[in-house]
Length: 250
Image (tube, rainbow, N blue to C red; front, side, top):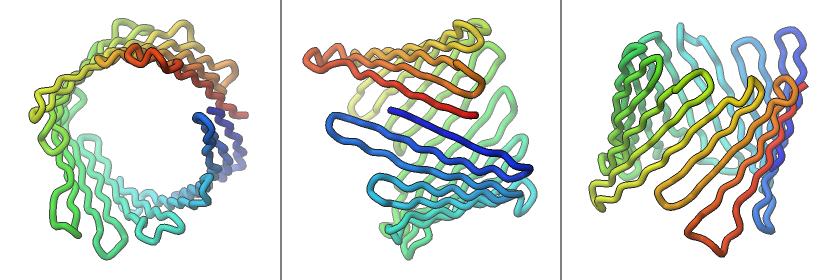
């Protein structure tokens, strides 16, 4: 994957152009994205390989601590959506509604302090008059660790995660998921190590035998080069996946 970004800042005006490409086997996909900022307005337009045009217009501070966004995709006339977000030092609410005759309604919220927080989300499909998702969770945060307990997938799965900050350079993390219907347990463990102020190395291992590694180098201010690799120990006939990403900013 190759990623290129360039931008120009003039007073309070920002214009950027981003091109992203991904080649998998014999197929190549990509998109071109442009971003415009002026005052409280942000306009984001993206054109992909299949000539789909995605547009998002965001307006900040319509009311204090409130942000609204309208998004739609051409030629899909049912893709319109309105998002409203409210942020407070101890609470956050995010809601969205589809702009079509049978909209999808979504609502999520969280509240708490820097040490403990509670949150949840719910989704309702008006066409079928049914809830399509609901989840809830609690998290604990301390200077040297963070832990969370989540009830997800409409109450069908319980997920717990833990991150430990060993020191300023090394972090380890683990995630365990239990599905009540199948009694299946899955887990992922990973670590991140800061080699120097410009270099980060990450590794991940899953219970199904997949091992992944990432090496990221900031070779100039705000410009990154990333190498990644993933190996599936259970798919011995499949070659490891290799990736290269390059992000350039002037």
